[in-house]
Length: 116
Image (cartoon, rainbow, N blue to C red; front, top):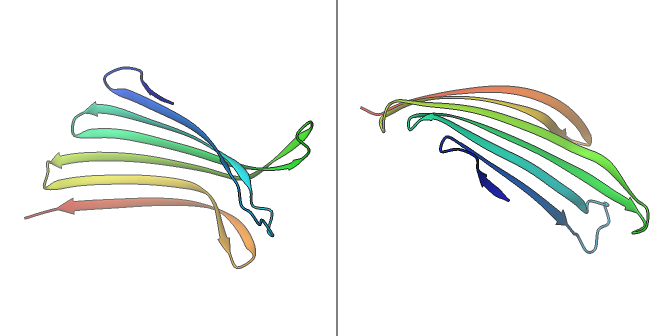
């Protein structure tokens, strides 16, 4: 579902069922995501992306949902000299798999672009 709330604010929601067959590692799941974008003006905007993944077990009559993964991303973009110069700041929080261990992480990125 996509919504245009105002000229400056848009949002989207999606729900997907991911099936694996065969599924030896029991990875079939439900994936939800919410995305929103707010435009301050044509050269400055904010984006938010939130996603969850649930493992579904049990029967159809009484399913059990277990939160497997939760991720959030925040992005700020300012095109201070469009289209030749921009600044981006991004924050991301969620799990990452290292070997067999699942670790939560927080990351802050910055990117400065300048074409001359």
